[in-house]
Image 1: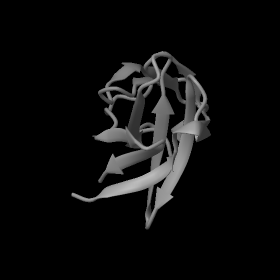
Image 2: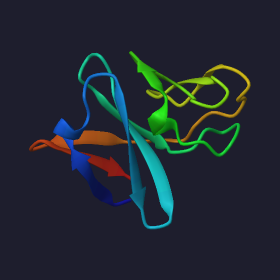
Image 3: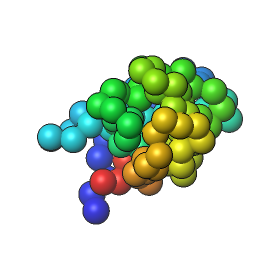
Length: 102
């Protein structure tokens, strides 16, 4: 699996999300309150809404449409109406850049 240079670590503030599109796929990259970075599929599993626009609190993101909450550190749904977990991707920061393995 290739590592992809997704963005600058400085592009994400604490408890923020960022949309990243690569080829025909979309991802959401998150930074939590402990300065850790995570990557998931970009869209909510309930409806086709991008999660990078959702409210980020600690290790969770709330879908901006129907308020499903996901733990982006492992992809698990915390709050319905979504019932399917998100796919997550290995993420690392090197030399100020965020890399994801897809």
